[in-house]
Image: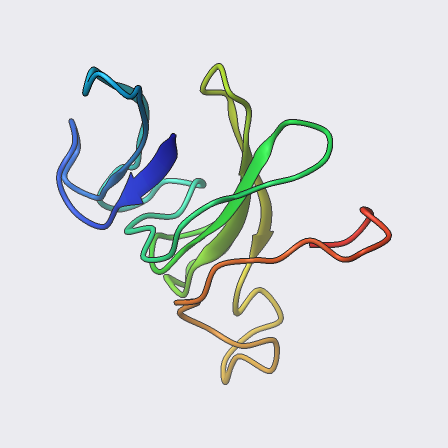
Length: 114
């Protein structure tokens, strides 16, 4: 089973973890507090796509190549490699593309879009 925490972890901005049915927890990824391209504070759960990778949103964090702190969409492999796919408010303030994602993603029936 895989999940996220909004706070805590090594850097205080949440984690992605897996836990087995016996209760053994393994932290796959630690989000950092500020100035990090990965985002932070993942509020919603993850969705596993048909390719086996997990996708999620981070509520805050600086995002990739932006001075804003309005959230990200990310991909993480079962092995813990995280890739930032999109940084909200990357079009500039007042965030025409949205900000602070709270909801989980869903996969489209065609398997291509989340």
